[in-house]
Length: 97
Picture 1 (cartoon, rainbow, N blue to C red):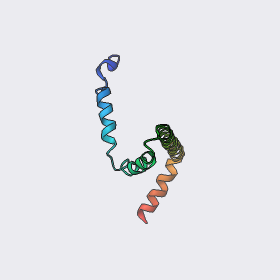
Picture 2: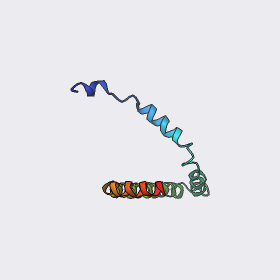
Picture 3: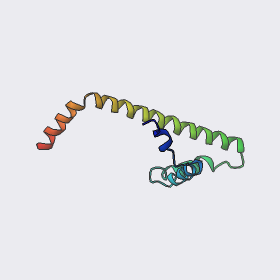
Picture 4: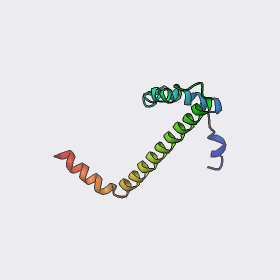
């Protein structure tokens, strides 16, 4: 067990993570956001300052929203794990009826 750190090494480098991020851009979850992104940024391309402000606000808004959503999902998961035994009983009863 002492040599586990030398045996298990990350196999994805910076380029692999970068291309994985680009590949995930084309996932079905992200594609509906693309028209919204272009709709926010494209109307005023000549006004660089406004386009930059809108892009940063869009990025911060999405980041905050998904961070809060992830935190809430973690809280729900913690709640469910505390009462997992009760939920298993209820699910078992519902499964047989």
